[in-house]
Length: 259
Image 1 (cartoon, rainbow, N blue to C red):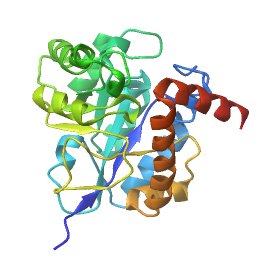
Image 2: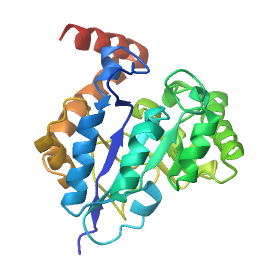
Image 3: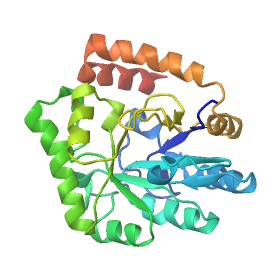
């Protein structure tokens, strides 16, 4: 019998009219979903009987239509835009927070993070400084994965059990440190659905982009046509391996800006 498979959605900042985004670079903005698009997407899920879950809930692979909803970085719109709508439709989610961003312009403050957690949303860790983990030495990995977990737990007064990789960059060494730190899962940017047979320290997620159309969003939720995104991701991974993360990011930024 085939294992049940679930899509894990990956969001970042949500754009509210008249409010500047945390960053203006084209490579960042392509991941910023307008508030009204996000609302339409969540209302579509509800009207079609989909259950929005946190990572912890999704890893139990319950029956019925459902998917995991995740947010990276810890932007202030997590609390101001996403949380109220998710509460309205009865949906859960996991918010992966970059602890070093707390209190910076456009990101949640410590009090806002506690407010988000008090709404019974799951809080995960997205590193300390958003560094690419596979570029770090052992000391750097410990700081980004272990120390950030400890800092979040001190702020929240509860155990943090889920981690997501900045920029989707990771390697086997990263996964080992995450596991040894006491996390229960590690989310990446691999284009795949997850099942009970998926390594919990290599979970796939699919990014919802600024230009995702309603039909594209529905296809993502249903896990249709993922091979196209996998192919593009494979080409990008090859380029990252050839150029290195920093050079790849500069070239990618120029291409997106000039597109």
